[in-house]
Structure formats: structure tokens, C-alpha cells
Length: 402
Ligand code: GLA
Image (cartoon, rainbow, N blue to C red; front, side):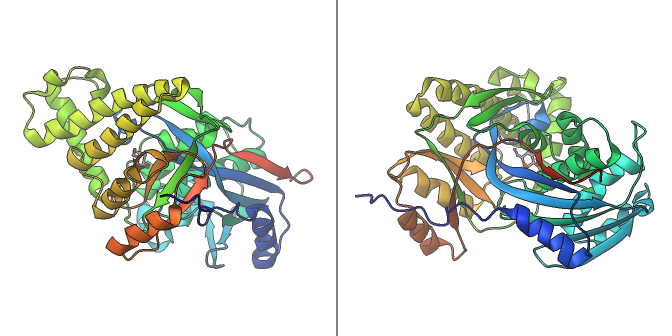
């Protein structure tokens, strides 16, 4: 029935390194002193657990963003992205507390850069020296697909900034800076999963992540499984959205239960006295933590039946108990889970729009057919990427002394 088809849109993208460096020259007239690559991430299982001190199983992917940068002698920052070629210009001094409303004037991608620079240089806790910079960004990560292009950018800025101010590169500290940039400057109350995955990813591995203490173990992803990202083409911003509502529900449940976090709940019976809506939210978090343990063990053991069951159950829980899926993600996950060659599929990331992640037998999935069936239901530019687990944010090049 299924014809092994060359997966659509899966050819390795042209390296963004050359594009970023060329853009820095053409748009800002300077040569790159530092070039950084920074991957996106996809989460195999464990969503909406990170801000509940819970467990997740993300991996950094071989689709990445590249930042080419040159330090300046003053405190100005000039930024340009290949997406539109527009140059944005501000001073570090603009990024002081109390001018957060200024964010509204900026295109969203530049606010992640601002947030990280503010974290490092405007409110420094390590004596880091404020210094302006020119930077150009090129990316092979689709925006809004739930692949954490924002965390990739935050970590890229952190890595480049460490070269400029001469501090030791500490990926965990940079991950924390990135999260604080999102929470306190961009205004999205996200957890730490994305930044840790982008900072500490390892080729051929996923990360079994414990967000309570930000620790992890790398779990090999078997060679005979493909990781597919099924982008629904639906885009919904998390800013000011139901994401915050879900966090508040969890905080409400925690207060009523008298626990430090939902991570402390192992027994669903403990949720019995919660109002039904809060009970459902908490039930998702408690059961999702358990599914992360199951999938990490199943990956190690090569137990595909366990993988499939847990991934499907995760999607159902995110749909029914946590209510963060939506029609496009539900259609894509259902189609994927009945497509020959796919082991298991579920929505990944924050939800509402974005992508489904699937584990699949290489060469056995008729991707064209799956996308065509999806598009019979939703007239959106869906696409399928085959991604490979990749290393976390790293330097590509440092030229001269900077
Ligand atoms: C977004 C957030 C993460 C996490 C996921 C859901 O990606 O940035 O911190 O909460 O949603 O798992």
C-alpha cells in the first residue's frame, strides 16, 4: 500500500552560515568576527510539564539558525535578518527596566535579542562589560512551527556575547538568561525546556530532562527510527494566550493541593477534590511525567509498542485534559497515527498551532499522501521535515581578536 516516497521538503538545507556572514557585510557593512550556529528543538514527549517542575524528552535538531556578529566600540546594537533585510537599531541604554512598553514597537524576533543582551549587559551580575554589536541572522528553522527558533536565537546571542565580553561559555547559564529574556522582556511565561535542549543537545541523542533541577541524561535515538516533524502550517502566538491561562490553572491546583509543584503528585487519587477543570489540567501533568519515563525507557529498550502507546496517550491528554491542541494538530496526529510506517505521533511544543512529532521507520512513510489527506481537511501549507538529533549551540568561527 505505502510506496516509499522521497520525503517532501527534507533535503538538507543550504548552510545558513554563509548567508548570515554575507548579510552582515551587505546590510551593515562589517565583516563577521564571530559566527554561531544554534539548533531548533523538537520534543518527543513531555509537554506543559517544564513549568511544573516536570519531565520532558526533547532533542536539538539539525535545522538551525546562524548568527554572524561583530562587536562595536559604542553601545549601539544593529540587527538584520534575512527574512526581511530590515535593519533595526537601538542602544543598550534603551534596555533598562521600566521601558518594557518599548517592546511593542519592535518586531518580535529582535525582542529576544534585546532580552538576552539586557540580561547579560544591562543588568549584569558577573561584571560583564556592556558593548554594542552588529549582527545578522539567517535561519533554516520555520518560524511558528514550534521548533523553538526563539530559543535558538537566544542561545546564539548568548554564545556570541560570551566571546565579546570574554566570559567562560556556560550553556546552562545562557539557557537561564534566555528563559528570563522571554519571561521578563518578551513577556511569555515559558519554562526552561527549549533553552536547555538547544544549549545541551547532542547528535544522535534525545535528552531525558528533569526540569525541577535542570538535570538530564542523554538517551540514544536508535538509527532505525526517523524523527519526523509534521508542520500543520497553523500559526498561533503564545504571547498573551491560553499558555498563560494553563500556567495559572496549574498554580491554582498547586495552591489547593498544598504541594510545592505538580511534580510532587504521583497518585491521581490526590486530585479527587479539585474542581473538574483543574483536575483535568493536573491529571495531564501527572500522567505526562509518567509517559516521559516510559518513552525514555522504551527508546533504550527499542520497545516500539510502548513508544506508540505513550505518544498517542500524550496527544489525547493534551487534547482532552490540557486542551492545547486544536483542529489542525488533532487532524495531523490522527492521520499520522494511522499512516503505515509511523510508530507513534503526538503534538509537540506549546500547541494550538505548530507541529506534530512522529517516530517512523525510515523510507516507509508515504509523506505525500499524508500531507494530501491533511490538506483535504485544512487548506494550509503543511510540510514534513525529517530531522536528526544535533549538537547544541556552538561557535562556527571566531575571526581575529574580535
Ligand atoms: C513552549 C514553551 C516551553 C514548554 C512548551 C510546552 O515551547 O516555550 O517552555 O512549556 O511550550 O511543553
